[in-house]
Length: 510
Image 1: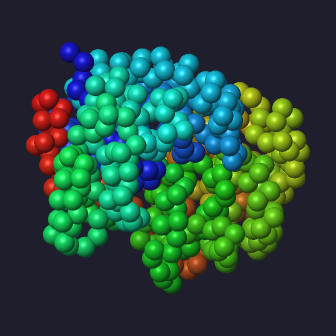
Image 2: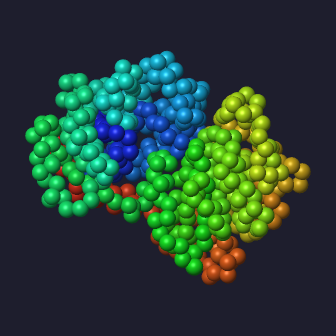
Image 3: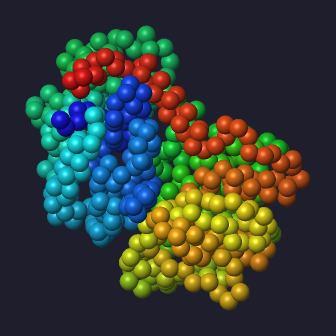
């Protein structure tokens, strides 16, 4: 018997659909069901590589982890990775297809991918008891309804009851619920079986007149009011959330300061989430509106358009600040695209990422990168090969994944940062990254390298030694994976207590 389905849609983007889907996945897992997430089409620069080398959206990886299962590309069969203001790389079943403008994608390609969507959903429904489906944006976007493959068309195909989520924190929640329902076709409106008010602050009893109004005006029951929260360790889906991360906590003298460059096309910024829960680390994101200051370590993150993000750093003066700090001896680290920017030159002869064919890098590492059409996507395990101040002395392994289209060549005498000995489950002996002679500037293609608890603590302690601060060993309960699991349980408890789960089970037919 195929799995039961329920769908989480929203009145707009960023109302909390992804996090509520993760919460429901955890709740159903706790209640003894085999559950999987599904989002047919996700637009995000935060992606992940599965064990079989397929690329998928980070949000569905988080939801799969909440469901207690390994992520699989069927959970997000179509991933759109923006490359510019109106174009994206289209990744289908984990493999890049090509770059498309928004108009070309919706007019010429989206409809042809419907069989991919239904095939992926059907495969999950054969394997699990419940599939929690997430929509995208709003189902009431009239201009996209003829070609959409992510909202009501999916609900119809799966015969899924729909929960409509509104974000009260941004204002206008009542109007957004009423307006969304008014714009839906009658058949689709009848599929909306419950409303969830998300990110509520204050006394919920004062909101009861609004609940009464919504139910009387729309005929759809309000199934819960979820409070606003900010202290659970749940990875964010995309860069919108970085605005909320800046300067939440004050810096103190017993901490080391890490500055992460926030570029326009930053990707995989969840690489740095593990630092946020280290009590002796103060981490902030730096864009054109923030001064780089005098941090202990600067990290240049990955990018979906490395050359254009490099140009942004140069135009804003941040590039000059990075070079100045590096020459002072400040630690500068580049991850993936950030590693490429550290080099002397970047070449894109086939316009794989940009219309710019050649640009000089920051010149902090003697490496040259040439972009290619083939994308490397693999999970890896590696040893630190560098011998400098930060990579030297760490003799453990690091785990992570590669997502890149560039090939980087090292100049004579330059040392690699890591040695990959396992790639996609196969034993290999592949050099990765580079470090300068002092070991204070280094880069790698390995995303997720800071998730390895021992390596992260090694780096922090090296920074603390430089400042004359006392170092600490890894403490029980500080493992990144343990914090994530605890976060899912806390999220599930919060949402379970906020929603009418009895009614939701009734909608599922369970």
